[in-house]
Length: 325
View: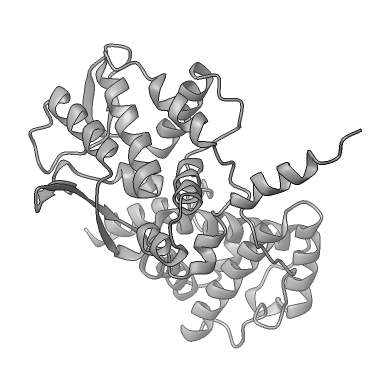
């Protein structure tokens, strides 16, 4: 039983490694076990786990190409050289993520007495300062047009409108949205509320905008989602027009958004996160307060919320148009 658990954990932890853990991190059974524990016991978020696994795998491959076969032989100068090469092909945020993965793994191995020191701890990554996010944002008219263009005669259409509306009106992350159960839409004080299970195990509850209230109940009633423990946003069964009992995946949502944007003739190249940014921008543009937007978006810092504030985009455009030639 224990071996089966470890085998499943290994497959989950290192999805980019077809043959298991990199040889660099398995010189001894103790090192292999400690490395496996880093990905399974220490990192709970599946997206972080995949990103870190990919970063560690690429570093191990780089070490192999440069004849670094032993963990104890890796020094800060080697990690620094690797980071320099990463900067030639990756953006600063990606380089910092790779470096963070190595730092955390080496720290874990040092604490487990697999390595005497962390060779990545003294290596500095590239400077990166962001004051405005890069997520494409829709104008209010575009968002409205996209919602109105969805065909409401099908269950998939009702589902898609409810999902897009949820991300716009509640600033929900796509991961939290598709992780909702039917019971996460409930009535309290004569008002419909939603419950979002956010990153880090946090539960975030907030009342529904009246449009979102309408979208959610139209979808739930028409789809007859009676099982309170069942998934709220369910994948479609081929082209049958029926919904399965399985949840939508993030890739499904991304493809759905691309189809809906094309049908609505929205030319902005949007993604899942665009609706979160659109909702926050429109809230602030209509007199909302940044600190309240922070609470609604469930951000730790108002600085993070400020990255989604794209009101200055319109100001910049107005100023550019003053150049009359």
